[in-house]
Length: 436
Image (cartoon, rainbow, N blue to C red):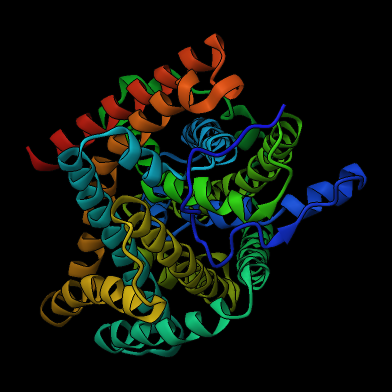
C-alpha cells in the first residue's frame, strides 16, 4: 500500500531525506540510521532554563522530587513520540499541519506565540552561556552576552557541512555534559538508597505547598514547545520508504532513538537535582537556588578543586547545544507557518538579537540577580506557550484523515489527552502563582 504525503513543500528542504536508511540492513544498522534526531530533541530537556528549578528542588527538598523529573520525562517521551509520528506518517511538520488545518488568523496567532517561545528559549541559552563564561573566565555578564552573538557564524559554518555533522556536534556536547555530571555525582557521594526510594512520588509533594510549587515548576518547564515542532521536521531527514511498512518501521526506530535520548536527559536533570541534594541540602545550604551560588559553593563544600569548573563547563555545553536546536526550530516554524524562507544567517541573527537585547539591558542594570530572574521569566513564557503546541499535536495525531492507519489508538488518544490536560492545568497554576 503506497501512502503519498499530502504535503508538496518538504520541511527543511535542504536536508530532506538526505540520510539514507538501509532497506535490507540489520536491526542495528537501521537504528543507527535513525539515531540523531532524538539527541537533538533531548537538548531541550537539559537546557540552562531547567537548571535553576532542579537546583532549587534538590537544595530545598533533598531527593524527594526525583519522581517529578521522572514523570515529566515520561510525559516528554509520549509527546515526542506523537511529534515524530506526525512527521513520518503525514509528511508534515507540526507548523505545516497547523497551517493546512486552521484559518489564516489562527495560524498567524500560533506562529506569533511560537516565535515568542523560541525567543524566550534563546534568551535562556544566551543567559546560560553568559553565566558559564562569567564563571569560567571571569568575563562580565554583558561581555558574555555579546560573545554569544558570534555563535551565529560558528553555527552557519557547521550547517553547511550536512545534517549528520550537526547531530555529531550535539552528541559530542551531550557526552561532555554527561561526563561532567558523572564526575559530580561520584564526588558528591549521594545516598543511593534515598535516590531509589524517591523514584515513586511521595504524598508530601502534594501536601507541602512549597514542594508542590517547585514540582510544578519542574513539570511545567520540562517539555519545550519548540521541540514538538522540531522533532516532527527533523525525522524527515531520513530517507525511508514512503509505504505503509516503511513508515511503520521509521516510527518504530525513531521512537527508540527518541526514548533512549530522553532517558539520557532524565539522567542529567536528575543528576543536577541529586548533586544539589547531596551537596547543599545535607550541608544546611537549603536556600541555594541560583546557578552562581551553586558554582561558588560546590568546591568548598565537597572539598575538591574541579567540581565548580565541571559544573560551569556543562552549563556552557548546554547553552551552546540549545543554540543549535533553537535555530533549526525557528527556521521550521517560519517556513511551516508562513512559507517564508530567510537566509540562515539572517534568521539566526534576528532570533539571537531578540534574545540578546533584553539580556544585555538586564545584565547592565541589574547584574547577576536580574539575569537569574530573566532566566525564570523565560521559563514562564515557555510554559504559557506549551498548551498551544501540545493540543494541536494531540488533535492531529488522532485525526484519521491526516494520519490514516497511523492515527492514535484509543488508549494512546486517552493517554495523550490526560497528559495534555495535566500539563495545561499545571502551567495555568504556575502562571497564576507567578503573577498573582
